[in-house]
Amino acid sequence: MEEKLPANSRILSGMRPTGKLHLGHYHGVLKNWIELQHEYDCFFFVADWHALTTHYEEAHIIAPSVWDMVIDWLAAGVNPGMAHLFIQSRVPEHAELHLLLSMITPLGWLERVPTYKDQQEQLKEKDLATYGFLGYPLLQSADILIYKAAGVPVGEDQVAHVELTREVARRFNHIYGREPGFEEKAEEAIRKMGKKNAKLYRDLRRRYQEQGDHEALEVARALLDGQQNLSIGDRERLFGYLEGSGRIILPEPQALLTEAARMPGLDGRKMSKSYGNTIGLREPLEEVEKKIRTMPTDPARVRRTDPGNPDVCPVWQFHLVYSDDETRKWVREGCTTAGIGCLDCKQPVIDAVKAELGPIHERAAEYEEDPSTVRNVIEQGCEEARDVARDTLAEVRDAMGLNYK
Ligand code: TRP
Ligand code: SF4
Image (tube, rainbow, N blue to C red; front, side, top):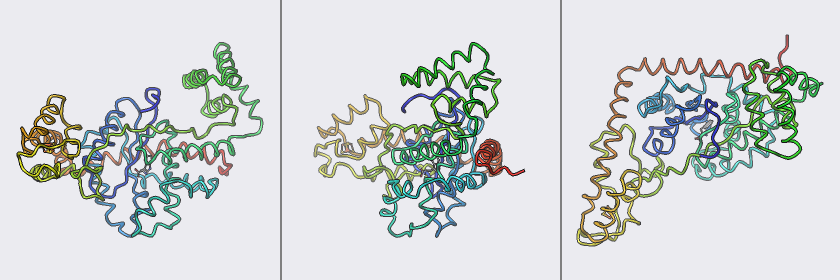
């Protein structure tokens, strides 16, 4: 992860419900979410509208995937007592913000997002020359900005979407944050902070604007965060005034790049549904065992007496995820000297994967038996999300002059 955010910062992330989750999702995303939920105010959501942009012809797969995915999250350890879990389409404010942002987003910005062309090439069997698909990253921007999220945990492929979000926020603030009499209002707001803090703010602002001192900027932001006696409007003014722009209505989020927790698939390529090399989070343990037992090994190791090379073996990739140094040493020695067989080698992996999945299966079974619990978690999460989303949207409408009385 890059820079650390202040404790309790708001974090937002979403996942598309297009099928069952597997170990790739668990190691690549969920474990990270589970860590983040302890430290930050996390909003995790089911991006069902995003699923629709690519799966509009098979929309029926979305509904079951939504509930399966929430169960997978809960079973993996995402805690609804700590994080807010919700479904995108149940918070229609996302759609309104998407619409409003679409007014100011140049077409070229969307056409240039790398995933736009890449996905169209990769998913040739689908017609993705649609308005909705072009707007995919802008809908994602609305998802993020409506919660004024400070951090967005994403994989490499999504960084461009967070970057677009930052540009859209900047443009929005630039166009709609310039109210008449901005400087006077900002100066008035500074005086409300009291003598000492006002002086501190002015000093820090000068240091940032005259010397480009980023630390001063951070300290000034923290100072503003701690000002209980400022209204939201005044605080936004002073954030903007710091940087020399207008009022900051939509703050720019930061991408929290999940370190390349690359979960190998059964064939050694990245684990992915499209490669058919996955181990499902809720796959029966006997099948998981069978899959690992039959997964390919070093192709040059034909007979038990042939020495092998772990570096070209998918099983070794699993040892890198699951085994300690001692086991890895045993593998390397045993493999290269033909001291162990491939089934011996696979056994610790089988044990580790089963030990990981066992508790997940138990928790999943409890939720499967009691769907109302899952419904309630989502119900509550949607309400919490809407509370925040509604407030942001009111500010956005206000800034755009859409609050007709
Ligand atoms: N596009 C993301 C993906 O495919 C899912 C997503 C939608 C998302 N909205 C988001 C992720 C907002 C982070 C923040 O993985
Ligand atoms: Fe792969 Fe292990 Fe067999 Fe070596 S012994 S080829 S590392 S499965």
